[in-house]
Image 1: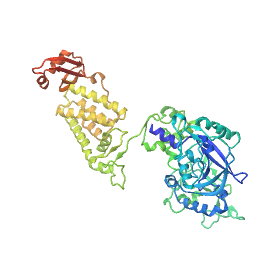
Image 2: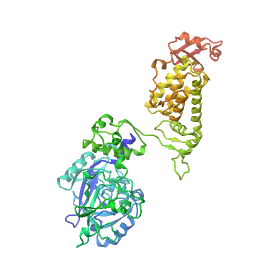
Image 3: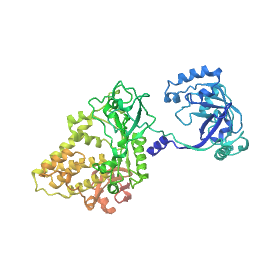
Length: 616
């Protein structure tokens, strides 16, 4: 699915090989790279470092230093996205060389902005013959290209006009010549491990997140730090809360708050605006931040946790919100978990949906929950677009404020229209003009209920009974399937039928309709329930139940064709034979007119589906 694919790409698990290139002239410096194409190792003609790589300064020769420094300064102002999306390849030679681990040849070390220090090792082995990006770079700067993989015979011949990036057969690779790509990868990786120059490696694109915010709201981080004072100053003689007290907070020596002192609560502050201090507004709450313990001064962490700290496991706390002893009890975990249904936009695939599962896995591993997975079913609701079919945004001027719709038509109308627009998962454009359609439905339903309330003696006829039970079945099943638009459509059909009865609306039908509409339009439902004479809320009344036998039609409508063209329609019993079907067909004027003066040569009759009369 798209969700699984997005999550897999976000995590970015990659199996490959880590390779070490010794730096020429150094006893201990090495350039480490990660590659999924170890089979192309013999095609390395240069190594590229990210401008921010820690080895840049040490591998750069004196004659290249000025040029390298200028390049590093220029690229430091560009974002990672800008660097990787740019079509123009830039770079500069450091003057230094790396030693190829298998051939011992020297390969030049370049720096290029297309390599990111934040991704992988911050260095790549460049194989221009078999990597498009490396090929473009080598072509621009006149660097060597060595072909070490060629297509198999069935795949055609090698073209040296562009990089060959597909799997193939190794050539110009010493002992590994003739090996197919998969085998060559394993063999070369094993050789690197044997000579202690690399080996198999699994990497991930996933990165640690910054678990701190410089704002007031959020859980305080239960960490504090010791404070140092100038030499000769006694801790008992000073107070770091004073502005003129010289002191140093030792952020390099974090101390966790004792479990007995948890939870750590936020201080009350009149002004919790961010301010200019990068430590956040809590740095201004000095009576809270600074405290003494065993005659020593300490300072609390002033950053707070992000909303993820609570949202990733809030469904557990919902089970047991008033528990002061633990996050939630094992009994309630057993009774209620896992979550039956998770509804969220597709954008949550690599956000809350993914990280909540990470947290859950930790809680499961630690034994806090018996359930290995947090959610049993996932539904992505579609986005509601502006009336122009584009994503709503202030810049486009197509934002619809739901408060405006509520002000004019009421909250029920808003809810009904949102659900009636189309399937839950579909992307749908908003059309304010169409809200009036569900408003008319509300008014019709309300009138039907009023008519039923005035006459308790009306009995339901067979047609009304069948339509009612079909509607109850349809609405119940559609709610389970979250097909809200078709459930509303079924209620509209029932409402139209009851409207046609005028003042002869059966009370039972009106009550069942009221119960069915209540999840979609709760205000309307409660009002109608009251009109029907109920003093209590309908929320505690049992849901409607249908009779399956009353949902089955005894008759069927089917088209009648003459010489392959539809000329009319008949309604006959489901089990009607050919003779009975023909008798009904001849009663249809448009059919009999087509057969007038003609001989019937053949009759094709499929019960319940088609009647085709061939005549000449």
